[in-house]
Amino acid sequence: MAALKIELADSRDFYFPGQTINAVATFKTSEPYKATEVRAYCKGEARISFRENSARYNRIDILDTNDGYVSFYTRHAFIDDQSLLWACADGSENIPPGEYKWNFSFTLPDNCEPSFQSQNGSIKYSIKVEINRPRALDKTETCPIIVLRPSLGNIPTDLKPLDNEVTSDLGASCCGLFGSGQIKVKFHMPKTRIRVGETVNMEFEVNNQSTTAIRGIHTYINSKAVMRAEHSEHAEEEIGRMIEDMVLKSTIPKYELKEEDPYTAWKQSVNFDKPKKSKEFKYTHQFVFPPLAATFNGGNEGSLVSTSYTMEVSLDIKVFTVAPKFRFPIEVYVMP
Image 1 (cartoon, one colour):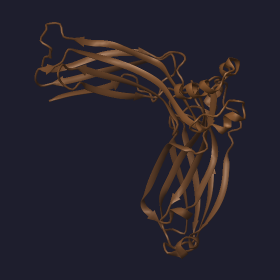
Image 2 (cartoon, helix red, strand yellow):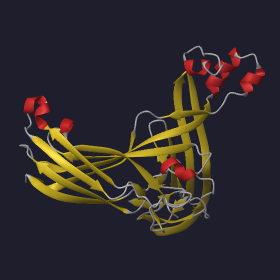
Image 3 (cartoon, rainbow, N blue to C red):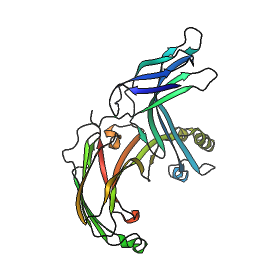
């Protein structure tokens, strides 16, 4: 049996550009293990890809394409580095039985953009250790890394607390098949300007006049992004064949996609130990805000991606279509 794992030496949830990632790879084998070398890799890459109706380009004097759409993409490597951890020196092409620890480190470039994921693109970072095996499948282990950029400036003093109230009528769904009556909920959140890593409090005051119990709470953080990309090679060939004016061809701009559909960047579901059947109760829910990129990339200009967020909080009842739900914008800050 052989086992390979990676452990980060730093007990942190995310890294900033310019910081060093320190890690150790541990490998155990009970018998000689066929291998020629062991390498560590650090990769960080942006991939953005989307299509737009080419009719939009007629409005900016770029001619239509044959297939009716224009493709865009960006693929940019922020870091692509590697380090040799072990190499066979005796020609045996074997790692002798035993336990091995290899320390390694990589320094992130200053231009790294924050980790991100959506329907149309991603910015991802990872470290990987690979054991190169002749005439056999290489053994690999990968550890994802989150990179964030600090927000420029300080958090505004107005933390924008939120107070809201909603009433859900269970009789409006399936003629009351899953319950009847009303659920009234008052919701309070002390701040909607939130720092990554801080504890978020949500307070509920529930008046349950329905016949169904409340089983828990669902919390979603949804993102919408503005992404910047260039024409794909295919689209540039199509457009290039149709544009005779080289001046116009040289002015084909970078294009911005404003996402219309939200992407679930983070979610959490909390189930009560026992469904709450009380007619009136108060409940406070806490969670640590996850490592997400700052709103609008913290004011850093010229970024490939700029993100805004909304939070959605709902009570878990049998009839999800009429569950009490709150949806509101939040601002995310990343402090150094």
